[in-house]
Amino acid sequence: MKTLIDLTFILNGFLGIICFIIVLISIKSNRYINIYLAIMIFGASFRFISRGYLGLTDQIEFVSDFSKSIAYVFGFALPSLYFKHLVFPKLSFDYKSLAHFILPTILIIENKLHPVENLLEVELNGVIVFLLVAQVLYYFTGVYLLLRKHIWKKTGQLEMESEQTVLMKRWTFVLFTTFTLLAVRLFTALFFMQNKEFISDNYFVWINSAAWFVVFIMILTSPTILNGYITEISKAAKAVEFQPKQMSNWRIKPTTKISNAQDLQLSIKMNLRLEEYFLKMDEVIEKENYFLKPGFTIEELATKLAIPKSHLNFLFKYHSETSFLDFKKVVRIKKALELIEDGYLKTNTFESLALKVGFTTYNTFYTSFKEVTGQAPQKFIDSNVNLVIA
Image (cartoon, rainbow, N blue to C red; front, top):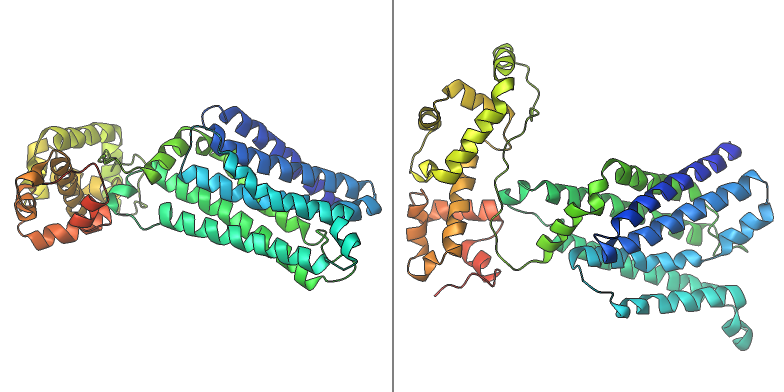
């Protein structure tokens, strides 16, 4: 069993090296974001390969010495720096970031050479452990608050149209969960395995390996998290510049399983024309203002598009992210955002804007606006500095 685990460490380490190479390739497009990820991946991969090799060759003494090294303390700041640059990307290296590695350097020197301990003739294991734990909690809390505010925050329906946003949330959640597991494992080793190897990192190493394996697989299966997608999402996360998102409501693959016999027959008939229908819908949104008419119905839309109503119902049921009513609501709010950007509110009221985009009352406009954008109208405007309103 021990041999199998050690072999697993080595294989996982080499998988990490492959991911490290992929990240290095992507650094050109996201240099100051991915460099931190590359360092983390290489460190984890090197550790797994070394740990597995020492275990397979029965170098028990070296395994013990290797586990006592707290070089991993350098890794505490790396996730924080990675996520910070992900949310607030910079064009040049921030040398202030190096300050994060001062305390880890001191702890490693003290743990290895014991200069302060020898000078004062006191036992400092407890102090080192305290500082290790304090660092983990500090960075863990900071990263959690950063991600919750800028990436994991609840968004409106316009936000759901962005595949980049979904990918960003999934990626940051997986990576944050990985570091959470690593922190729990470290605390367990420090507090529940107290002996002569008090700060040993030799316990439950397989948890590290399993957690990083998930990260490696995600990088291999979703390489876009390392380049264009991440760049665009991170810019959007910090941007104060207002720019309505393009609609992307349609899905070729059914959003729910088609089980109704009649719908299955209709699916066969419509499959070859799905993209044609999607194109027609997008053209209507772009060129016409049908949805801005109060009380506009799906029957009227079917007539305008020269598409059977049953086909439209099928599209919204199985190939749309939203129902027809919600879709109409999003189109109207998107139009309202465009009018706001064009300065409509400089000479008009919110009530006038509500009527212009198809709502019968300001209350329904207010509720829909908040549901779609995630903010009340005035708050949304206040949070976008480029929306200048007289």
